[in-house]
Structures are given as structure tokens and as C-alpha cells.
Image 1 (spheres, helix red, strand yellow):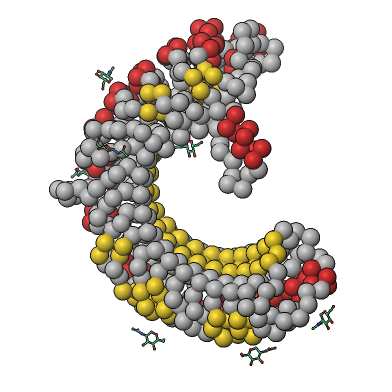
Image 2 (cartoon, protein in one colour):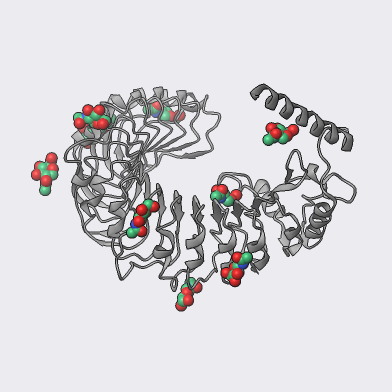
Length: 497
Ligand SMILES: *[C@@H]1O[C@H](CO)[C@@H](O)[C@H](O)[C@H]1NC(C)=O
Ligand SMILES: *[C@@H]1O[C@H](CO)[C@@H](O)[C@H](O)[C@H]1NC(C)=O
Ligand SMILES: *[C@@H]1O[C@H](CO)[C@@H](O)[C@H](O)[C@H]1NC(C)=O
Ligand SMILES: *[C@@H]1O[C@H](CO)[C@@H](O)[C@H](O)[C@H]1NC(C)=O
Ligand SMILES: *[C@@H]1O[C@H](CO)[C@@H](O)[C@H](O)[C@H]1NC(C)=O
Ligand SMILES: *[C@@H]1O[C@H](CO)[C@@H](O)[C@H](O)[C@H]1NC(C)=O
Ligand SMILES: *[C@@H]1O[C@H](CO)[C@@H](O)[C@H](O)[C@H]1NC(C)=O
Ligand SMILES: *[C@@H]1O[C@H](CO)[C@@H](O)[C@H](O)[C@H]1NC(C)=O
Ligand SMILES: *[C@@H]1O[C@H](CO)[C@@H](O)[C@H](O)[C@H]1NC(C)=O
């Protein structure tokens, strides 16, 4: 019986394939006429300055058009991929201009309703000039993915998006001016895995927690910059699948206690909220955490962070500008997975050497703008116990480090960025510095370095930025120093102070 079924299925496939190749020599299905017309009408109402949609023309198989994907067998349009990815921050002006120039604008024509099988619609990073999100999008019943992020939409979010019962991904973030009175319409989207409403003004939508916490499949919730306050009536929440919670850039006055019941959270972002009081111990039991950003709050914490003791999966810890004071130590346990540690802009005075010794996976550390008053050799030597091979970026600028730079400095082979500026470091720059072959930025300005610059600086073939200014360095800078430094584009000359 089974064999028969299989061969019958095979037979059907052959028929289907034959029909397809009948319609189109390339074995690709031609798109459906009514859907072709719908797409052309949709295009007519768009402003497309860079002519991105030049392939969308009468007579063409619309399934071959840029950004359009059809179902293989039926030819129904299933995906419209018209979002843009923004260039990297260090992209050239020309790349940025090209990106901005290729943004689509204009109007979004309801002709898209004709695309009955459309499951994926991405219009992100275009510029619809403050247009309202069209109501008809709530009728595109097949949608599983809707991305309208950063596309300059305005005015209230249409509640009939709650009709899109198949939605897995809903990203309306970064459209600055949304105002919502309620998120009740979200609570019926029971298939939702991912919700981003960042930068919607949810001042009045005080039901946001009620409306989202029972979504059984929700894995990521992004509500950054939504003017959220602490919920006046605390509820016990039921986010059964949530792993990523982003409540950064809101106006929470305390860390919501319900967070601590969500033991499976992997990522918590609470940066820039202005939270006051001590950092709650509740984080201690969140042993699944890999990412925790508490930067830019006003914790009045002691800097012995006992609550870190169990978080041995933590990879990213942001504690920038949270008013940490005095000695920094990690009391018990260890942070052996930590790759990124930001303790900058606090009032730390001592970094207990022991706590640096166990950071065996550290790649980036920022201790700048504190009052760290230690021998620089102590910090570097403790780091060299374990993170020698991995450390890529070390910033200890603007502290009160003193003493000489130790030879161990030359052993951090992967170091790309090193700033020690604005301390009281004296003595020579060690000859071993020449071994830092990955180094791109070296800033030792505003210290008390004396002696002559080592010739070995000339071996730093990847160096792009060198600042040794405002020290008491002696001697001449010879061409020998820099003959190989072909990439160097910034060099601040020796000045004596
Ligand atoms: C549909 O066709 C494309 C391109 O010919 C192919 O890569 C893809 O695997 C096919 N998908 C299915 C589900 O058959
Ligand atoms: C939506 O698009 C933006 C920009 O292209 C992208 O960064 C974001 O990850 C997308 N959202 C989802 C849920 O895929
Ligand atoms: C769609 O949503 C609107 C507004 O929320 C509602 O009035 C309407 O009944 C819904 N339609 C369907 C078919 O569910
Ligand atoms: C946010 O919404 C509230 C209430 O609707 C309003 O008072 C406030 O001005 C809005 N904030 C911004 C930045 O638009
Ligand atoms: C939380 O979710 C579980 C599983 O979906 C359900 O059994 C339970 O009743 C829910 N609790 C509340 C308070 O909603
Ligand atoms: C801070 O550390 C220094 C040096 O390890 C120690 O002498 C001092 O007692 C510590 N202060 C506090 C308040 O722990
Ligand atoms: C640190 O944590 C790792 C991973 O859990 C563990 O294997 C190691 O024994 C711990 N080390 C110390 C000193 O507690
Ligand atoms: C550098 O400064 C130290 C301490 O002030 C001094 O002992 C040393 O002689 C100086 N070295 C040079 C080469 O000037
Ligand atoms: C620096 O250069 C000047 C002039 O070229 C030379 O007289 C002097 O001896 C040099 N000083 C050192 C320390 O090499």
C-alpha cells in the first residue's frame, strides 16, 4: 500500500512539473495575472527614486521581479522583500547616500490585498514620510512576518493588526511617533514569537504587560524607548517562552520584580532608565543570562557585586554610568564566559586584581572615566593570567593609574585597541609593544611617560592611530620608527608638558 502511495505521489509531481514547464520554458512558474496587476498598481503609487523596481514592468514574469518570491508550484506571490539593510556605521558617505537614495516612499496601495498568499512583507528602512500604517494590512490574513520598522510611519497603530492570527514576527519599531492607547489587540496574536514596538509612545498603553505576558510563544519582546513606567499594580507574569527582553530607554523607576521570575531569560536590556536604589539581588538566580545591560541608571550600589556570582554563562555585562563606587570585586563564583565588560563612567577606585584573573574569555574591557588609583602593572599583570590570548580592546583612559608599563603588555597578541591616556603612568613604553601586531589604536597621551620612544613601534604594521602627546618623552622621532606604518592616518606629535 505504501509503495503505491509513493508512486502515485511521484506521478502527481511529474504532472505538476509538466504543467509548469508548459507555462514557462525556465521551469519557473509565471506569476498569476491578477497578482501581477496588483504589484504593478502597488508600484505606481510608490516613489522609487533610484529605480529599484525597474524590473517590475508589464509583460514580465512578476515572480522574477526584484524582491518578489512566489510559491514554486502555484505561482502565488508569497514574499515581498522590499526592506533595506542599513550600511555599517563606518560605511563611506557614498554608501550612505546610495542607501538613503534607494529608500522607497509614496503610498502603499491596497492592491496588495489581491496577494492572498502573501506571508512575508518587509518594508523596513524605507521612508514613507509620516504616512499612517494602512488599515488594509490588517486584512493580509496569510502574513506570518510583517516588518515595517524604521520606515517613517506615523500616527496610531491600527488595531486590526490583531486580525493577523498567523503572525510570528511583528516589527513596527523605530517609527518614532506612534502613540498607542492600548495593546489589547496584541494579546490575541497567539502565534507571535517576536514583537518589536520600540519608540512607540506607550505612555497611555498601561496594559502593555497584561497584553503581552500571556502570549504563549513569545520569545523576544523589544519595547525600547516607549516611555514605559513601572506597572502600578504588580502582576504575576506568564511569559512562558520569553528569552529576550529589551526595556531600555524607558522611565522605569525600579527594576520590575516580575523580571526575576523569568528564569529562562537569556538577554535583559534595561540601559538608560534612571532606575535608583541598589542593584537588586534577584539577578543572582538568573543563571541562563548571557547578556545584561544595566548601563546609565542611578544605582546607589556598593560595588561588591555578589549577585553576579552564579552568572557563569554571562557574556556581556554593561555597567557603564551606574554610580559604582570604591573597590570593584566579584565576591564568589566567577565570570568565566564574560567576553565584554563595561565599567566605565563610575567612581571605582580599585579593581581587585583577583577578579580580573578569572576573566578567561574577555575580549573587550572598558574601565575608562573612573578614579582607579592603582599601579598599571597590577591591572595588566592580573589580566595576563587568563585573557592574554583573547583580549582585543582595553580602555583604561582617564583614571589615576601610576607606575610603569610592564613587559607583559607585549603578550596580548590580539589587542586591536589600547587606550591608557589621562593617567599618571611613567617610565618608558616597553620595547615589547612591537609584538602587538594587531594593534590599530594606541593612545598613551596625557601621562608622565619619559625615556625615548622604542624603535619597535615601527613594527606595528596595522596601526592607524597613534597618540603619544602630552608626556615627557625624549629624543627625536626618526623615520625608522614609522617606515612600516603604512596605515597610520593619525599621529599626534610629541609635545613636552
Ligand atoms: C523552489 O524553487 C527554488 C528555486 O528554483 C528552490 O531553491 C527551492 O528549494 C524550491 N522550494 C521548494 C519548497 O520546492
Ligand atoms: C526588520 O528589519 C530591520 C531592518 O532591515 C531588521 O534590522 C530587523 O531585524 C527586522 N526585524 C525582524 C523581526 O526580522
Ligand atoms: C478585524 O479587526 C477589526 C478591528 O479590530 C474588527 O472590528 C474586525 O471584526 C476584525 N475582522 C475580522 C475578520 O476578524
Ligand atoms: C507621549 O504620549 C503622551 C500621552 O499621549 C503625551 O503626553 C506625550 O507628549 C507623548 N510624548 C512624546 C515625546 O510624543
Ligand atoms: C500561564 O501559562 C500556563 C501555560 O500556558 C497556563 O497553564 C497558566 O494557567 C497560565 N497562568 C496564568 C496566571 O495565566
Ligand atoms: C579596597 O582595596 C584596598 C586594596 O586592596 C584595601 O586596602 C581596602 O581596605 C579596600 N577597601 C574596601 C572598602 O574594601
Ligand atoms: C567558574 O565557572 C566555571 C563554569 O561554570 C567552572 O567550571 C569553574 O570551576 C569555576 N571556577 C571557579 C574558580 O569557581
Ligand atoms: C623618568 O622618570 C623617573 C621618575 O620620575 C626617573 O627616575 C627617570 O630617571 C626618568 N627617566 C628618564 C630617561 O628621564
Ligand atoms: C635629535 O636630532 C638633533 C638634530 O637632528 C640631533 O642634534 C640630536 O643629537 C638628536 N637627539 C637624539 C637623542 O638622537
